[in-house]
Image (cartoon, rainbow, N blue to C red; front, top):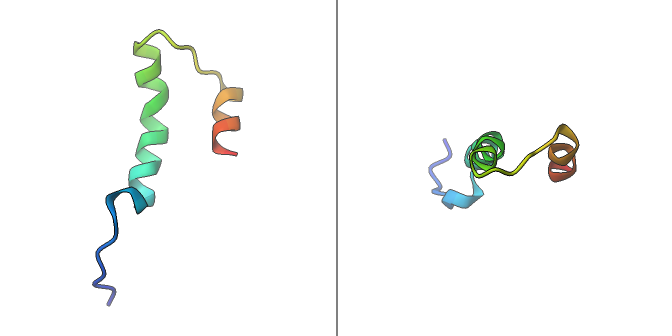
Length: 43
């Protein structure tokens, strides 16, 4: 069993959540995010 503790920022789950929530937060701030912008960000 893997008992090692990893950094909060090394968690793929955290970064996935940030990527999923970021467009909604930016929208609330008045920034428009298109599908093309999202594709560029992910790579």
